[in-house]
Length: 417
Image 1: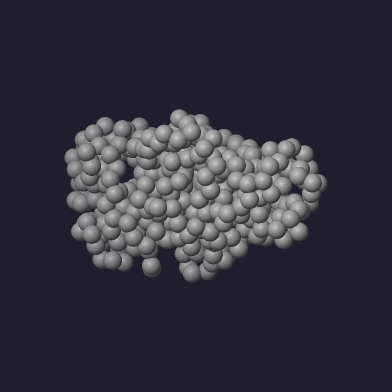
Image 2: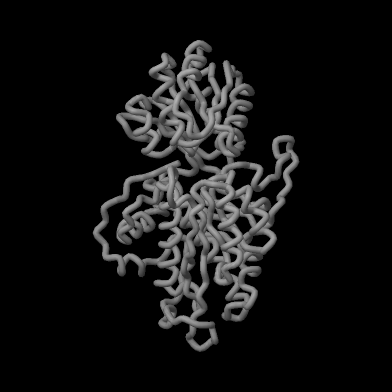
């Protein structure tokens, strides 16, 4: 999961928020956007809320805070431009602490909050599994900036080629593990020239699914999986696994999981004699991984969705505006994708209002869901659009390596199958 250093940009917050939002198609700067109350067609403004669910506290809060802040920034910019005349946007953020049960409770609360017309989140695929039906039953749009499990959009039988979209309310701006796992396997075998990998996962929806997809593709390419194992999230002692990896003759380790466990695992693998690179998905792509590896993460690898935000012309305004807004927490791995997720909801609101003669429809929540699948714009992360399953059409990924104590880009590309 990507966390990037904020650029130091000396721009006044108020000036920054008057810039056109990334992915916007323009919009009049009319007065009256800050007036509260129902839209009566005479300059009044309807308050429209975008919900957020993310781990705002706990071990994954570095990522959750970046999600929350980026969504808030999108709403501020939409308001500053009066992007949807007659509408003032705000946020309602819920903390799931990466807990599926809490996530479901948050989903129910957001459904019951009448002003909420769409939700950005969550971070974790396992949390999303508990939320999808709640949102779908209420016809409330959900756009995740970070979920990568294929099951969420393609159904449980996607591995056999049977794709079934179970929830019409579910969308995401992050690409899936079908793409990420195969991209990682192709890099490790074809580019890094590793042929014997030991595969480990944390048993969770994201980690186990990603590891399985990686292993299948690695074997298809001609590589050998010399061993497999599982850990429990929160485990501290990985010495037994380190001994197994060292004895298996592996030239690499692939880990499906997240950085709180991956960092110590990498550290103990090296200390246990398995001096080989640990490779993981976007769940380990965070500076915290490097810290937790205690200096033993050098040469480790990770994939993350998209291209580094700092390299994209489409993201320059977002980076500048985020810095100018003064958030103390970085936008992290999913800031750009969260902004784009929020902006897709904003675009859907705009379309719903336009198709209702310029007035906010009484059934805005339902109309937003109808319009969301048709949204297309250039966002922070590039072209934003959704396919028939609600998945992003953007298939770009990047491989990173820990070099001199920090993640550095190694290779970016677009997965083509």
